[in-house]
Each structure stands twice: as structure tokens, then as C-alpha cells.
Picture (spheres, rainbow, N blue to C red):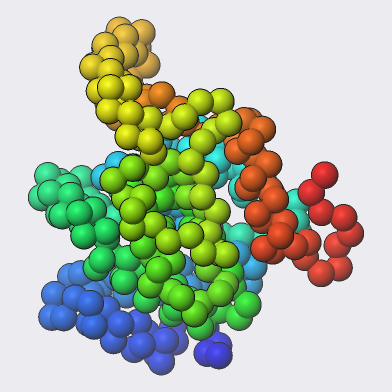
Length: 268
């Protein structure tokens, strides 16, 4: 175990070596990767859990601009972790930049079931769990982010302290999904079937047709939103307030983590 200080040369050297393994001589990418990894490492020191949100779609949407139901899920999981007595750090893992080139690369990555990006995150998690004592990690993924989280877990068969909670994985990824004892898969909100999970193309198509009108409505009301937020396929929302959603998550966290030593009770 390396004792992390403000400037730890050994840790920096190892992080740079890991960056070069993936990005070779691409100096800018290596520097960005190294700095981000060291920053997470420093911020996660002393925490029990690292919560990593993997957004859906292109993987470039921050929490402030995502669906309300996704924000409710992140808030609910964070609150449950706190009730169990654990401290946590939440980060948002954006897979893609804003440009069209990055989006085209993301399309290719999705066809390949995120092979490179999943290996990259898996290496980061191995680094973090090796250098932060007793750290556990929970991946929180929605839609394409759920598929990405599943791909990461498949790259970490021996790393038992990394878990994945997956919501509404698109039907075209499900054949490659592997459900392990560290995975919670939620394919239904308990109210209706998810059109994205079950391949309801008609329902999905209607959502895209209605999307522009919803977007225009918000603009006229002076409530500008991102276009993606106006596309709501049937059943593809998992609000924390939905009993089946909340109960499954709380049960999973209670079983996998338990209540922190020294505390009585648990979730009620």
C-alpha cells in the first residue's frame, strides 16, 4: 500500500506508466488520464465507496442535464449508502466529448461492446482499489451506460469489490450481457415494460417523433432543455420513488455491503 501525499512520485510514475500503456506517445491524452486518475485517487482517500455514474446515450451528459429520474437514482443510492454508515465519493465518468468525431467513435465503441473503453476503466479501478485501502466501487449505469458498466465488470472477474447497478440496457446489447453476483440488473420499473430493453421499436419510434414537439413546447415556455431529455420511450424511466426500483437497489446494497461495523440496524 502506497501512502499518498500531495506529490507522490512513485504513484505518479505508476499512473503515467498506465496511461502510456493505453495511449502510447499521445502526450495530451496521457497527461489528461494521469491527472484525472491521481485526482480521483486523492479525493477518494478515506472514503469507503466510490460511486461512478455512467451516463446513457453518447456518454457525455453531466448530472445537471440528465433525466430527472436518473438524478433521483443517483441521489437515492447515495442516501442509502449513507444510511448504511458508509462514506462515499461520487464521480461522473463521461465516455465521450462533445464533438461529432467523438460521437462517431462512441458508435464504433458501442458496436464493439466498449472493448477499449471498458478495459481502460477496468485498469483505472484496479489502480484505485490497489492504492486505497478497503475501497469498494459501485458503477451506476443507465441505458448505454448500463451496457458499459457490464462490459467493465466482465474485464474484472477477480476484483470482488467492484459492483454494477444497471438500468434499462438496450435490447441489442443484452445478448452480450453477463450477470454476476456483483451485478444488479433492473429491466423494468415495475409499472410497464421498458421499450428499449424489450425492443419495442414502435414505441421507441413514437418517442422520437414526439420529441421535437416536446422540445419546442419547453422552449416556448422559457424552460430550455436538451433535445435528448424530450425523448421518453415507454417504460424507460426508473424513478427512485418507484417501489420496485427502490426495493431492489436497497436489498442489493444491504446484502452486498451490509451495515458498517459499529452501527446498529440498517435500512428500515
